[in-house]
Length: 366
Image (tube, rainbow, N blue to C red; front, side, top):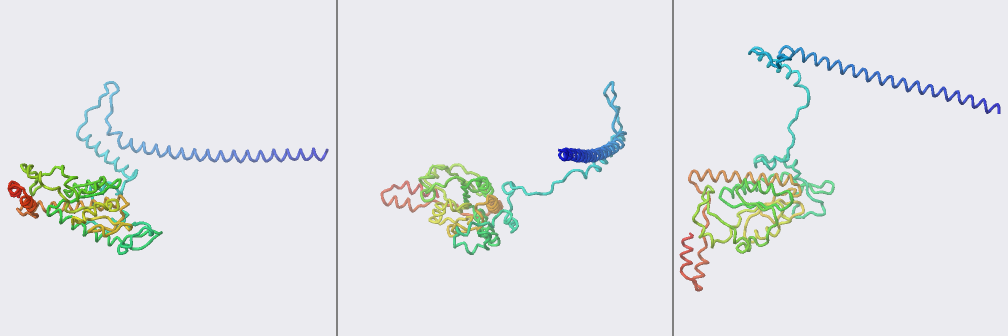
């Protein structure tokens, strides 16, 4: 019993001593934090007072005082105005180094608003547009082996040197067709390609298609596109009235060049173009067949940035061709020959029982 009471007394003494020590350490830590906070507040107040005194010294003499009764300012002379302006310039010089400054940064919308010209094609530009990324090695088409640079992480890497060379060749083709008054059709039916297609067609003076291609629009164009309106234009693309009656018997217009941004989904259109001898330009990824188009451009057709870049560059090439054509037209040079109607079909109809009015109609349309 005596031993138990002694142990109880010693335990109480030890517990009270440790409690006092912990209280003292906690209080000292709190005092240290309070002192640090007070020191930081004092330093910030000193900085604030120094800035206020500096501004008061700079502008206290130049700011006109306002009357408390009339709330009017005294008239200032030209010298006071000049001194106020100089004070403002001094304040701007003092505060010019404050804050942050924005440097040039990447803006994706510039590929649509101001696309680069064919002369501005470079490997860093193609690399930044993700043109070098292909598909998985299990999805590749062996006919694209000459366009592939290597393999990384199971993905084929497209050679940008070949991409740049083929893109420049396609730009020359588009520019030549536009210079000779040809009709260029831009096709892009994937999601997000509509703006790029419309912008490129507008720059090159051609047509665009961003919805589903109707099968037979070329092979059976007289039935599908027979009700589409046509017009006759001069060498400056100005409409010429008075030819509406002669255009009724004219077959549907076919494009002179087709630019396809996604050949995999529009293989029917490419097949129809091949049947009628219409040249085509297409973005060929590692999983596509390069023989589907006349002028392939090996690049990443899944990257919207890459598609916008290629469409913008081709649109700029068409715009350059249109500009050269109109310059030659002002000098009296015509770079293309107007298409005439077929007379053989009308002669065959006469031989099989037609009347002579068909020949007169065909001769007048010429």
